[in-house]
Image 1 (tube, rainbow, N blue to C red):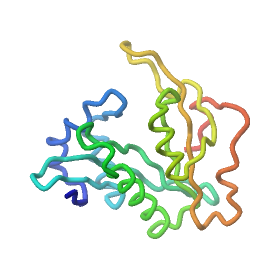
Image 2: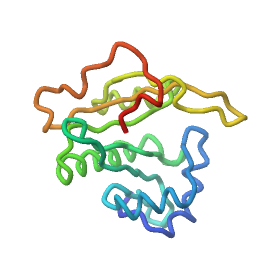
Image 3: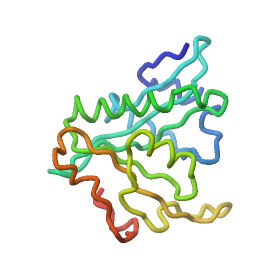
Image 4: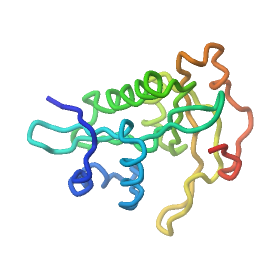
Length: 178
């Protein structure tokens, strides 16, 4: 049975089984530490009974006025623990924090335009393709750069659902608000 708990610093030394997926963004240690220190309520680990990390979510609250939102910086589940509902649980938790602790208007995330499995999963969770971001993922010398979909899900504070009216044109990363 999976248990969920706050991410801890020592987890940084135990989550390679999760981060070794080519579609999972891996950041440097200081990035994870910054998130853990600034938005600890947004950083949660899924753990197996024997202590294996099955997945995690990390995010933050950002923006101003009607653009105040929760952002999914990373959500990932180890390949051997996929299709068990862990990703759904982690996303639900992040939405809870955004809705009930931060009173956000919406939650957003970026996903590779080619990652049809993830896009389909997010759509099942109620997210929409809000806008395409051209060349969001830069080339790393091994893989080419790629566009992203900025996907959004309105929260109850956005009564008129203005945050999820899709843009009809793509934007570039430098045009992002946050």
